[in-house]
Image (cartoon, rainbow, N blue to C red; front, side, top):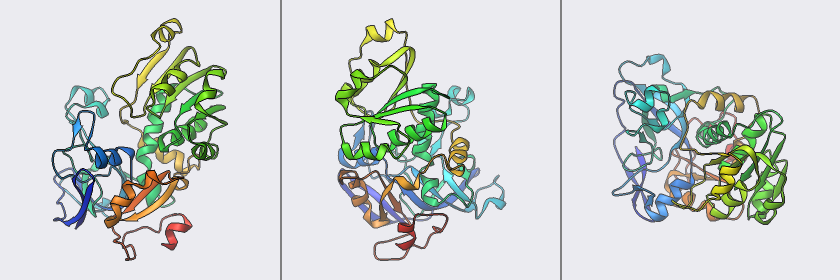
Length: 354
């Protein structure tokens, strides 16, 4: 199979590798689509994210969908041919965290594209059968791949506690901020304000569930919110957001930013705010499927760039293009060739024409 490999900081190359064989309990997935995440771009440009350091060649990509083409022992052969969305996690089922239901916090986690674990920018990949989630034919391959960032939004809004008639401020109108806005709307929130420094992104947020959009300088003058979700990682945005949360409200930090920052402790104490973080997700794929099939979340609309497997470098830099939201790579395609994967399942007209 052909694989895209980050061979060193700033350099990706395609190479040929054997198709992996699924071990007992695993399935082999022919990868149809892979979304490019900010973490992929960060590894590409900087070689590390916090304590996670790239020390050797690695395959990036953890937002993936495809079709099961083989199964390991203990998995029903009836699953062959099934279209799936991949939850890119391999927790230790016997860890304390997994046993109590927080499997995403397992200290022995093997997560796609987190060093040294290879990800999904390849024509085939294996995953535990329970983490290959079936998707209906009404859901396209691209949307199925983007269940992963949608899951971050689901986890974030769950932690925010926002529900029917509630209000939330979301800082950052990138992909995670946008899915948070859509999920908040699906939860019944009636006041969803998104802030960002980029006017074009704010314009996009208005199409993705925001009831209002504001610049960073406008946040301090806003009426209080039930919750604040930071999807920016910017210290100034976090401080401003905390300042407009009502007493006993919630603050959820999901954006990647500085490893340490100063927060207004007196505000947190005096208002008895609940401050928490989001690190991945657990038990979100059924909710993602329900939201997308019900038409409450539009993931296809987020896609602003499509790339073949040998164009991964361009895909990783797509976030630097004005107006970019989400780049998607199709591993069964090489530049100049027609895709060979199963990609005629409810895609955008642009993708069907490519």
